[in-house]
Amino acid sequence: MKCIILAAGYATRMYPLTQDFPKPLLKVGEKAIIDWLVDDISPVIDGFVVVTNHKFYEHFRTWAAGKTPKIEVLDDGTESNETRLGAVKDIQFAVSSLDIDDDCVVMAGDNVLDFSLKHFIAFAREKGTSCVMCYEENRLEALQKTAVITLDENSAITSYEEKPVDPESDLAVPPFYCYLAADLHRIPEALDAGCGYDTPGSFAAWLSRQTTMHAYRMPGKRLDIGDVASYQQAREAYQGIRS
Image (tube, rainbow, N blue to C red; front, top):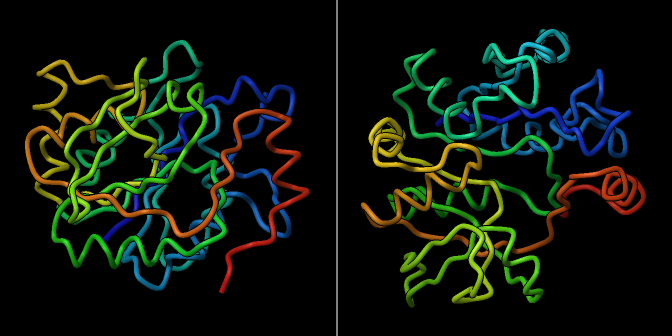
């Protein structure tokens, strides 16, 4: 299994911190944000791919040099927030550029977790389907800004909607996915069918209507670093992954 990390955003809400420096490489505690994610699952991953933009490509190349397992850094060729490809097209870019034919963990590179993603990977392998993570979110305004799913008694997804006005449940989906190789190769089909491409959950939402998918309930907390205030909160509160 490989891991594709989405890091091609421009983090304009965090200027000036990220005006000339990529958000995933900012420090939280003793590590960069992205290192918390990579170090956690390195023992169960065959290789990493980081998809970034042209502006931050050399920053990630320098960071990745000499790491084990190897981290491949891809430049998606964009140079501004206005010309970005979008998350789904960046996943497609990674799969096609490297001819990836492995099952893949796909995740955003700007979150920190207080639990190990290894359990999510084990869950996906046990289910034998593409999977997402989910967590309970009680704030209506937060549910209206994210993806929301419903599940059956076996954790299979029964509905999946991006940014619903009237959410059907309180189960929100963060940007962490396990995809079967065959499902990843359906991205062109999804895009041709009108699947959104800017948010990574758009593909998962489309895929859930084509095939069986399951959801893993997060056993801990996630800090989504989206602006300067949330970054400061993460620096003050984050204590690493619980054992």
